[in-house]
Length: 113
Length: 110
Image (cartoon, rainbow over all chains, first blue to last red; front, side, top):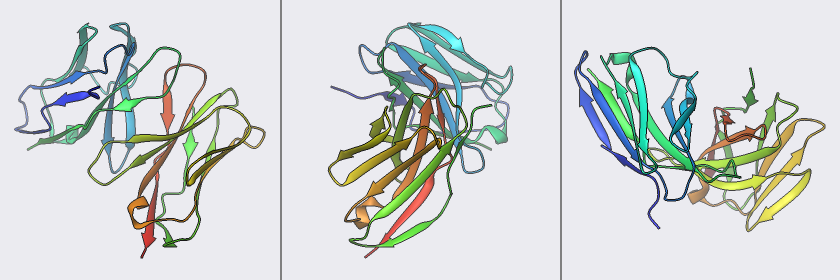
């Protein structure tokens, strides 16, 4: 079975541009998580969904960040406008219902110039 | 605010030795505990889950949980250079949301 799929793997953009990160969770997993990882702050949970519904978005840093999950097999994380401090690795993870074990995608390395 | 505390390291051990990684957590209602391994430039990979007090062994890995002391550890026996990575401890309070520690960097010296 394919694991969690993320695209793009690398993104370089200029400050002020819109960035969209994409994720396909493992088939059959009910939960989807978006994380951001930096050296300074470690792994931070941004938002998570259960059955396509956002459950907790308290980790979303500000209104420039938004996330959607239009169906069970696709989610997006959008940053508009992007800023240099958004530079980080963004991970998507999914989890089956009944277990808190999470399975991570390969991540998207975002660089905002 | 739930917290999971880990020593950032690096923890250096010689090849063949036992590596001991430790973690404390603040939430007394936490029920599930996890160890993830993250190689440099890669994503976290789940290697151990533990749900009850005591030890759980899987190959060269042993996870230990002491809920009274709010303490979780990971022992790696016969450490190999390929074990060199950052190890993340995480806990869950019975829900899907997981709190991660900042990780301990392990270096196994050949």
